[in-house]
Amino acid sequence: MAAFPLIAPDPDDPAYRLVTFVHDEDDCDGVLALLHTVTDKDRHAGDLTPHLMTRRNDRWEITYRLRADHRASYQLHPFHGAPPGTTRADWLHVLDHARPDRHDTQPRLPARDGRHPASVLSLPQAPAQPYARRREDVPRGRTLARTVAGRRVDVHLPAGHGHGHGHGAGLGLGLGPYPVAVLLDGEMWGEVLSVGDTLDNLTADGAIPPTVALLVHTMGPGRPEELSCNPAFVDHLADRLLPWAAAEFGTTDDPRRTVIAGQSAGGLTAAFAAYRRPERFGNVLSQSGSFWWPDETEFDEGSEWLTRRFAAEPRREARFYVEVGLQEWMLLTQNRHLRDVLTARGYEVEYREFNGGHDYACWRGGLADGLAHLLGRAPTNGPYRPNG
Image (cartoon, rainbow, N blue to C red; front, side, top):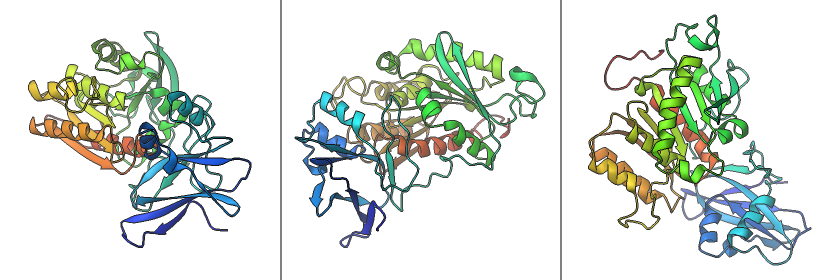
């Protein structure tokens, strides 16, 4: 039996592949394919017909024409009766019941809130993700659950942290104060995606120095307010969280060795942190940032507030790693605009576009690349010791 999804050359263009997904269970009236962000785009347009699988012989099939560097998580949703609708309630029902491809061969992407994991499609030219999977041959760090000013924060400590000096000093390896990475939506990165494995891999390979990661829980009901250029939230991170981490785990107070990372609204917030508090946050890792905020109307005078502030005000001392997916029709233009503004204002910017969507299957590789870029080499000015 052939391996699925079946990946074949596109006879008309070597830069593309024909990808066929199958569902070979017959206990349904139809199957909807959920290719992350690709299906979402048509759902937003009110038409899921292009993603309904076709019955052929004894199985359901659908073929997509995708560029050879595409990466996406995906699921299949068998249904009874009429095909799913496109309202929010319909879509939530689909997401609650969609399941991974029983024929997949790659490790699945875990989910939260009781949903099924997703399969992952990585076509041959998709960017490598050498740090995403757990490796048994590297020294392991440890993750601790803590509460800071009423907020849950999981702390990932690098292997050997504080050896011989207790948990506070962090000096046992002769490293000096540890670099610190603040990861927003920490409950997803820690509890679901096991980002500690990625951090351990990066450290073992020398891609980053031993770093303390603060996984800040932000996925509760207050997320839309907190992750929307909210000064009080950023001040909480700068004035409560970072000093606490310095006292407890020996982290640095040097903004050049401090990274704040986020995705979607978290990417917007990470950039806002450097805008508001550059003396604490000197490195921004923004993935698929919602830089349209607060108005989704493209180029309207109310849209892209933060980009307009960066354009109009004096340059902060901050470096940026910004990435966005080519499939993210609602974010691509705004992220390109931010890149252009930051570059024109003299900021150091590493900008990348990946062929994928609003998807942790892509972000987990980009997070590792961004941390390596921002922490793995010296800042451009002032004294710096790569190992502390």
